[in-house]
Length: 232
Ligand SMILES: [Zn+2]
View 1 (cartoon, rainbow, N blue to C red):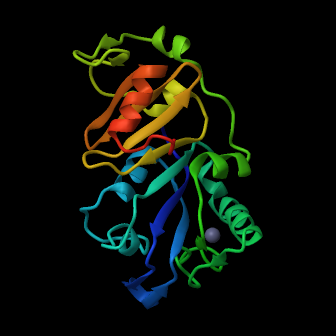
View 2: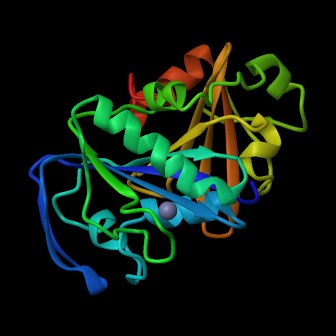
């Protein structure tokens, strides 16, 4: 995946107090905090960084993505023109406010644009619902089409699952320009893409992407292993 847009969802069930660069000490209410950003290149690498726990602080949002009170974060990856970041921020803002949510602190994630903020709070949000609301619902290729594309080796001891030998390509090279969701896990962040007849679980490693493909049973089992059953 080259450049693109993303929405990072940061559940803070107990709210949070955090010191955020030049914005100072902020108090954030309980809820899911949605942050809109873009990457001119390396969209999946950027999102993987946001989902990792351990990293040096660089952006405003790092104070939330490393917060000890954080629930399980996820991100919607939207392969699209990264220059549309502020338009997407406005769209997410309207979606949040229609659901009784509120804009976040003024200037958050918006130091170099004219928006009042790139952060919002809403009581609850789930990725498929948000992707639908943003009109990013184009269907990815189905299990059979993905299975026929390139080489897949059966995963030993793991019926109904296959691995693509070696690393890469970027997820959108397999899935096309569709919205996909990545989750924090105990290991590398995992991009999880349900498709007709199964689904893809792609590990976003520091050195590249490791793709695994499952049929309906294999994919469901893997989601359960990851504690994501019903979440994707
Ligand atoms: Zn903006």
